[in-house]
Image 1 (cartoon, one colour):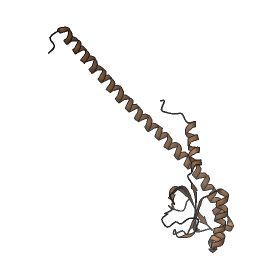
Image 2 (cartoon, rainbow, N blue to C red):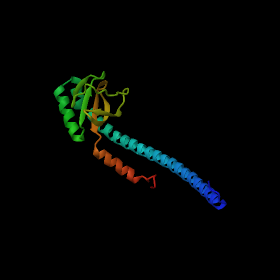
Image 3 (cartoon, rainbow, N blue to C red):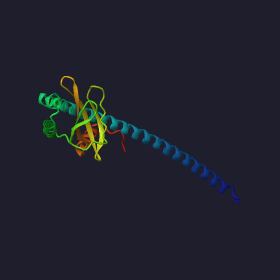
Length: 186
C-alpha cells in the first residue's frame, strides 16, 4: 500500500495521462481505419467504372468488326445455303484478320453450325434480335464475346466472335488507371 501523498498523486496523474493517451490512440486508430475503408471503396469504384468503360469501348469496336462479317454478302449466302466449307473458310479468314481467337456460328435456335472450339458447355446469351457482348470462360481462358445476328434478310444465324482478355487488355486498363488521379495519398 502506498502511503505517501506525492506517490499517490503521481500514480493517479500517470494513470489519467495513460488513459487519455489510450483513448486518443483508439480514436485516431478508428478514424484512420474508417478513412482507409472509404478510400479503398472509392478506388475500387473508380477502377470498376474504368474497367467497365474500357470493356464497353472494346465491345463497341468488336461489335463493329463482327457486324462487318455478318454484312458480307458472300458470308450470308454461304450461311443461307448451309455451305459448311465456305462458312468455316470465311470464319477462319475473317477471324485471322481481326485477331479473334474464338468463332462460333449458330442457328437462330442456338444449334452449332461451325465453331473454332468445343462448345458443349458454352451458353451464348442471345438478347432478342440485337447484338450483345459478354464475358465467358472457355477452356479455362477468359474471353470477351460479341454476338451479332446474321440476316439475309430474315434472321438466319448468330455469329459470335471471341477475343481473349489477355495481358494486353490489362496493360490498357493500367494505362487508363494511371491517367486518372489516385484517390489514396499514402
